[in-house]
Length: 211
Image 1 (cartoon, helix red, strand yellow):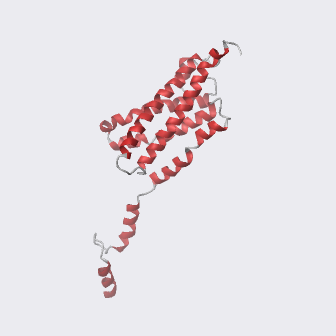
Image 2 (cartoon, one colour):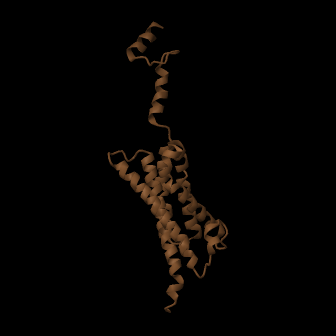
Image 3 (spheres, helix red, strand yellow):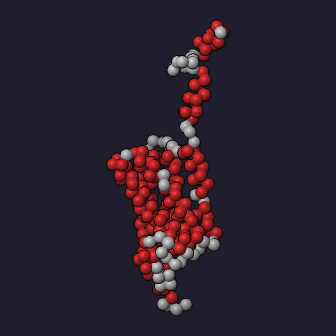
């Protein structure tokens, strides 16, 4: 191997490594956020630690994404230029998947620091906006498998696909109606017609006997 060869691929290696790190961080951020949303982290103190970790992972993921794109500017083979790494679908190399990756990067930058604006925009709006983090993870995984130079490798496919099962499971739990509302629906049948109060068991039995 010639001495000059490592210098021609160093930027590609940096971009490749930071891209994988960014995907892992985004996956961890999404899974941790879903775990907190589904109230799996109920023990005292764990939720606070989980919130801080969630915020820090999002910020580090943004840094990894920035490095992933900036390192490509030094790639002598790809030669993306500033437009190629900032404008979706402008790069000639697999434009569909690289464009998806750029969109995912912008969404990450938008959603990552949104917890600092939670009080200003309101909790309800913040939660609605924060749900897009799942979309960010899906776009990031699609970008990795579609544009990554190691997309055919089993280890990269495992990194991209492994979070899918727990993410889908927690999404189902998150979107399912709470148990309290289901109990209220069942208990509504035991209420007296025209009354908003539930009958006690002995009163209900006496009412049936009188009829």
